[in-house]
Amino acid sequence: MGKIEEIRLFLENIGMPKEQLADICCRSLLAMAGLTEEMSWSSATNHWLRIHDIIAFCNANYGTTYAENSRETFRKQAMHHFRTAALIEDNGMATNSPNYKYRLTTETLSIIQSISSLEWEVRMRHFNINHPKLIDVYASKRRMTLIPVKINNLDFTLSTGKHNELQKAIIENFAPRFAPGAECLYLGDTIEKALIKNVEKLQELGFEITLHDKMPDVVLYSEEKNWIYFVEAVTSVGPMNPKRLLEIEEMTKNVTAGKIFVTAFLDISTYKRFIDTLAWDTEVWLADIPDHLIHLNGDRFLGPRN
Image 1 (cartoon, rainbow, N blue to C red):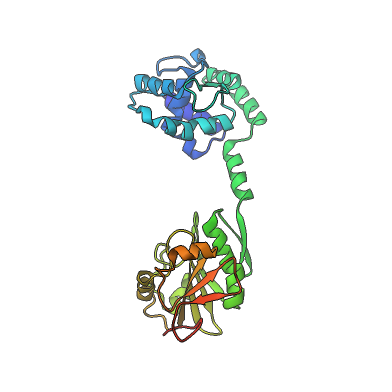
Image 2 (cartoon, one colour):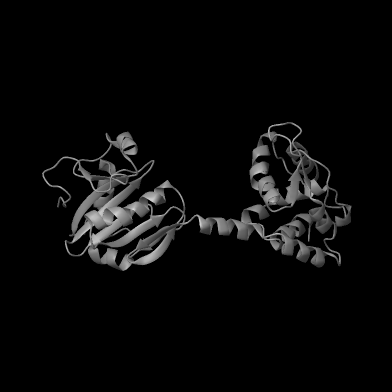
């Protein structure tokens, strides 16, 4: 097993996330230890190094061609995470200083020097007892910042972000006011894509396409009125413009239920940015004014056009 694979095994054993098991991270750690492929692990050192020095070492000893302008990639993909995991330390200077440097901690150096020796397991176990695995730390942070939402009387969580905050508002504030009793047939999460997708019901209603990239952000169905609400949650792109209406009409050409098209915004300032692109005979809902709808023309308010 070569140096890169062995150092990758070390990173995996201490619980580094998948992204930090990449070759660029493995080479960075080897460079910080001053180790070439031919050297023994016991020869590892922990001299202070700039990212420039790390790039130069990799190119000279591991056949890479990293450019100087890749320093930010090294910093973001490797150094930041290594420091969070207590593998390295910096010299405390300003990050934009040409003398800003990193080095392996004494503990990390000791572990790397023991790879392939009898001390390896003991030192690894000691490290894992005293330091939380970074993969668990990151997962915990994601769990803590998830957005709770109740959909169809069941508890779900959405990943963080303005788009999902707006989707939560659609479910909890728009639906009870303007689609009371409606069932959510589809809702996409920014990370998990189709969080809710009732394929059976969608097909029963006549949908031909239920792919995430074609579906509106939220689809509600009122069985009492036999109305389908197509709701786009817009924070930066994707309002109910004429092109979007044609796309939805095409995928629902066999749907006989009444169709209502809604663009939801977080606030009136976002709405104003899109006002000249919205299609006529659609509705606008603002999360910060939840009791009101804006109807764009037509002789009917919040009702299907077909």
